[in-house]
Length: 101
Ligand SMILES: CC(=O)Nc1ccn([C@H]2C[C@H](O)[C@@H](CO)O2)c(=O)n1
Image 1: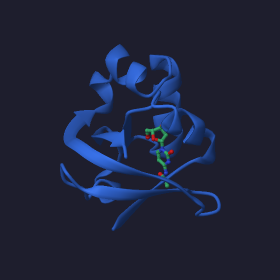
Image 2 (image 1 turned 180 degrees about the vertical axis):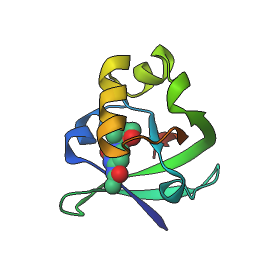
Image 3 (image 1 turned 30 degrees about the horizontal axis):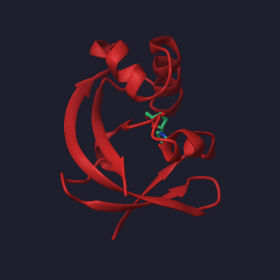
Image 4 (image 1 turned 90 degrees about the horizontal axis):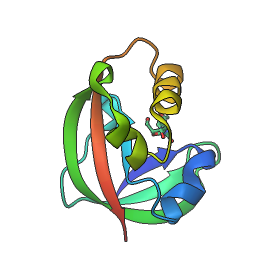
């Protein structure tokens, strides 16, 4: 089974179904619809759930909108700040939509 990591501060939102997408650079988006993926925390690699990938869609940082932010359980300003810190200067992102298993 493939694996993806999330920062621990997002674990509760994922487990509650409040966070249903993640935006990643290409090298971190090697998934396809239907993949079942093991999810662990980035900081300590502790497993916390499995997800199913619903879709992978290219999206540019410049066109991120409120709908993306809602799906991340953030404001748009917070989302842009988070992305800018993780991927400074990167415009080409991939939206990974997922559901909890
Ligand atoms: C190693 C690494 O990049 N890990 C990441 C990347 C992104 N996230 C979260 C942060 C935001 O909520 C979305 C959008 O990138 O995904 C993460 O938890 N861990």
